[in-house]
Image (cartoon, rainbow, N blue to C red):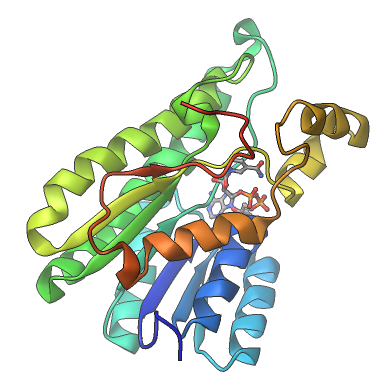
Length: 250
Ligand SMILES: NC(=O)c1ccc[n+]([C@@H]2O[C@H](COP(=O)([O-])OP(=O)(O)OC[C@H]3O[C@@H](n4cnc5c(N)ncnc54)[C@H](O)[C@@H]3O)[C@@H](O)[C@H]2O)c1
């Protein structure tokens, strides 16, 4: 059994890409997984693969920006399995890719709703139980957009910056209850998100500009998240781990 044996992890955006990879890595290390995703088909596929690894899975096909739905998912997970030990605030949508003049209020609001409010609602759902049990690991999936910013991505930068800043404050707020809060800030990752928006030619050009000359595989981000949620990281809180192939070196 792995280093997450007996733990319960709730992973938002667990139906695809980084979230699915994280779910399968954590299940392989002994965790049961509550998969939260707007895309119910993707979430069910992840759940089936978790069960094939011998762990339990729950599926919540909900929008993380719906506070009542997220609270209900948290309550059901605790009722069924007794705890949420690990929360990965990972659900996300693609960035602006447009000049600031073309960013609509609706687009900006949706970025904040999915990334920032989604993480807030899930954290509100998980933290009371974590406090009672005096144990918890929370990881927010930000981005290098949140640490250094990119042009033509103002709304996404803002949303990813919010995830980073909220995690730092929560790390201080929850430390008295032994709840660690950290951030993973990936660079380019080969998932459906960029593949749906960027041409293969553009992705090849972007890869050329990365010191390691390639995109990450989603598992390479999942391993970083799994580490931050493991006993090996018990003294790590309020930190930013940025697997980015050397694209951002600070
Ligand atoms: N792929 C990259 O290059 C990259 C880089 C840095 C950060 N990120 C971040 O990583 C996270 C995961 O992205 P990914 O690359 O795996 O993309 P992805 O599209 O493969 O997965 C994102 C998942 O989130 C789900 N989702 C979207 N909106 C939701 C909502 N409102 N409620 C519930 N679920 C919702 C989608 O259905 C999808 O399954 C995102 O937060 C993204 O911003 C990705």
